[in-house]
Length: 97
Image (cartoon, rainbow, N blue to C red; front, side, top):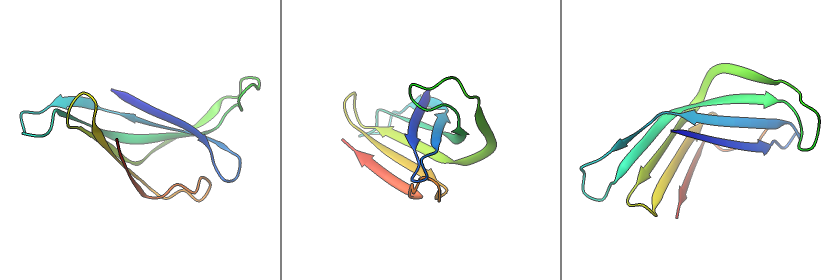
């Protein structure tokens, strides 16, 4: 499974964050399955509507992402990344629907 986000940092620079990992079905009550993977980063690159510019791929792992699915419509996303001064992203975000 792959989850990718694209955004601009507070400095205006583009950043891609991609988590790659396996979805594992669960027999545990209240949990349908879990996705977990390392978060990798690419920076710079082209702006929206601009010509192609090759991004810079950073080899180091920036954190982890875990998504715990309680059923087909509900999940909790836990996003643990190293705080980024360029993007202003926090080190931990919990998202629920």
